[in-house]
Amino acid sequence: MESVMRDILTRVGGYERCVTEFVRVSSTVLPPKVYYRLCPELRNEGRTQAGTPVYVQLLGSDPELMAANARVAAQLGAPGIDLNFGCPAKTVNKSRGGATLLRTPAVIYDVCKAVRDATPPDIPVTAKVRLGFDDDGQFEDITHNAFASGITELTVHARTKVQAYRPPAHWSTLRSIHNSRGIPVIANGEIWTPSDLLQCRKVSGCNAFMLARGAVCRPDLARAILAHDQGQRVDPMTWEEITELLVHFFDANSALYERKFAINPVKQWLVYLQHAYPQAAALFAQIKRIRDPDPMRAALIGANQSVAA
Ligand SMILES: Cc1cc2nc3c(=O)[nH]c(=O)nc-3n(C[C@H](O)[C@H](O)[C@H](O)COP(=O)(O)O)c2cc1C
Picture 1 (cartoon, rainbow, N blue to C red):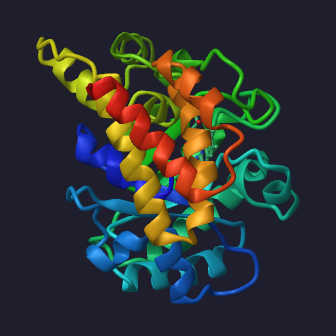
Picture 2: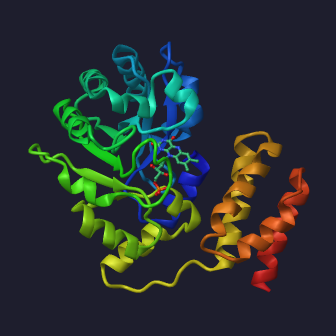
Picture 3: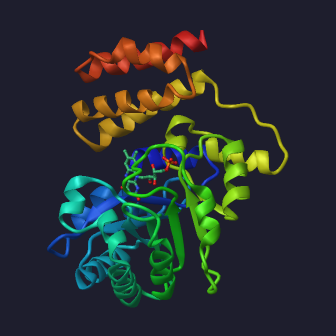
């Protein structure tokens, strides 16, 4: 998730932590500017404006190089380092990073251990895995190696690489994790509603959860989950509030990048928002051919004013 979205979602509330999109480590120790670009929160003590810590995620397979990059991220003020062993993208897997490493749990251990050893002890090092590459036959080995390396927490996206993003997520497999060290396991995959989370908790036995697409579809999802947990009822965000967020999203991206680069993220977000807000489909149809920033902003303001009226 990129920085403007992190800022918006953590302002809405309910999140304890965010993780950056992955920084790909292939052959060098990356310069600070790469880290600042992917994690502008490093200029704010590694926190979003709402105060939520943002861990920097690294993806790569060379233990020493990963360690050297983790050291840089920590020096720049990252409040935690997360290691990605779950990305299914072809380019990433060709260069032996992400989900490919699920086939070689020993390398997962080496990378986690090298990064743990190179990072100051007060900075958490966490990892994210899937159930396996082709199937979940090596899952125990993967988690055993991750736990043995000394990492602080493990997030599991409850699908194999081959299952990609196809539902369902196999939450029940997380129950089989043998973790005598008491390292927290965070369940991830297919949590779209507060009742999905309850079901995931019941089936996986986990007490911590990571939201991804669900959070983008429904910006108040984490807040709604917390309220639901405490037996409170909160009204879902209205479409009017969502259109305010859309204007803010466009303006914040315009300030961060060239203005024309703020256009596509709005279109992409509307595609996600359609899952929870039917009005997003109509707005998407209205703006999908817009190529210039001024008419895009005018359309978003218009959408907000027409609901507010
Ligand atoms: C467009 C997109 C980009 C993603 N980028 C990352 C990433 O950089 N690092 C990561 O660990 N996971 C990434 N993921 C995976 C999510 O973090 C998450 O594991 C996955 O979407 C399953 O959770 P969900 O069903 O709640 O979406 C990405 C997913 C999507 C759809």
